[in-house]
Image (cartoon, rainbow, N blue to C red; front, side, top):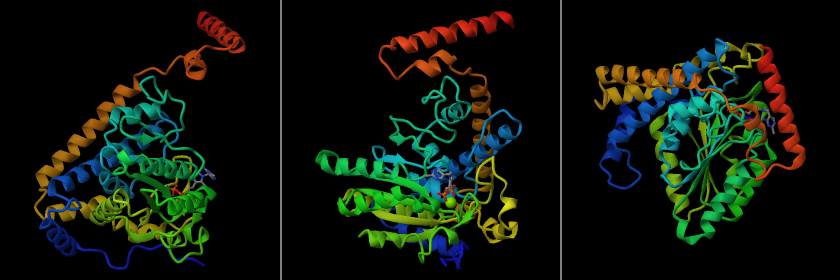
Length: 376
Ligand SMILES: Cc1ncc(C[n+]2csc(CCOP(=O)(O)OP(=O)(O)O)c2C)c(N)n1
Ligand SMILES: [Mg+2]
C-alpha cells in the first residue's frame, strides 16, 4: 500500500522560514523573492479565500451553480502561479482558483464565468471553474481529468521548436487523482523524450472525490513517478508559500534554460468537500483534517510576514477589508448582468454562415420564444 497522507513531519516554524528568507534576501539572482512580492502573494491568497467564501455563500443561497473550492490549498496554488513570467502559458484543473487571480484575471471575470452571463469570455458554455483567457495565456481546463496535460506538453514542445520563444515555459497543474489518468502518463513520457520546457505541479490534497491517495497509487510518493520518465520529481510542503514559490521558480528557470521538465508534488489537504455537490462525511473521518487545519497556508504566511515586519496588524486588517470589498462589488455587478439570449448561446460561433437546417432550427426557437413571451 502507498503512503499515509499526513502533513510534513517538521513544520518550518517562523524562525526557520525567516532564516530561509534572510538567506535568500541577500542574493540578487532572479530566483530571490522580494518582500513586496511576498505581500503580493499574501494579498492574492486573501483575495482567493474571500472569493471562495463568497461563492460558497451564493451557492448555498441557490444563486450560483456548483463550485469547486480551493480553501486550504492556496499555498500550493498562488505562489506557484506567481513564479510564472508574463508570456508563459498556464494549464489548470478546476481547483486552481487563485492561479487565475495571480495571472491577472479580474474578480469580475471570475464571477462572470460562474454566473455564465454575457460578460463571460467563454459565454457561459463551460463548466464552472473553467476560466480561460488568451491574453493572460491561460488555457481553459477540460472536464476529463488530465486531458489537457498532453496538450500542455505539445505547447511546451512547440515553444522549444520555435527557437525565438525558447525562453518561455509552461506550468501545468493536476490533482493526485490526475496521476492515474492515461493522459498523465502520455504527457510525462512526451515531456521526458522531447525535453519539453514544462513544470507539472501535482497538488496532492489526499483525495480524489471519495478515493484516498493511498488507493490511488502504490508508489512511495507521486513525485517519484517522474524518475521513470527520465526527469526530476520533487515533493514539497504545499502549505509553505515560500518553498512552493522558490521550487516552482527554480523549475521554471531550469525549463526555460534547456534543463527539461520537472514534476513538483505539493503536499496539501482538501479541507472541505470535493465540490458543493459532495458530502465528505459519507466517506472520510473528519478527524483526519485535524493536523492540516492547524497548518492553514494563509495563517502560516501571515505569521511569517508579521514576524519579519513585512506586514503589521493594521495593514493586515486593511487588506482583509479591501479584498472582501472587491469580491462583494464584483459579485453584485456580475449577478445583475443578463445571460446571452438562447439563440446566440446555442447557434453562434460554430459556423461562419449557418447551414439551412440550423437556420430553420434557430427560427423555430425564436418563434417559440416569442410565443412564450406573449403568453406571459
Ligand atoms: C477521466 C475522468 N474520470 C473521472 C472524472 C470524475 N472526476 C471529477 S473530479 C475527480 C477527482 C479528481 O481528483 P484529483 O485529481 O485528486 O483532484 P482534486 O479534486 O482533489 O483537486 C474525478 C474522479 C473525470 N472528470 N474525468
Ligand atoms: Mg486530489
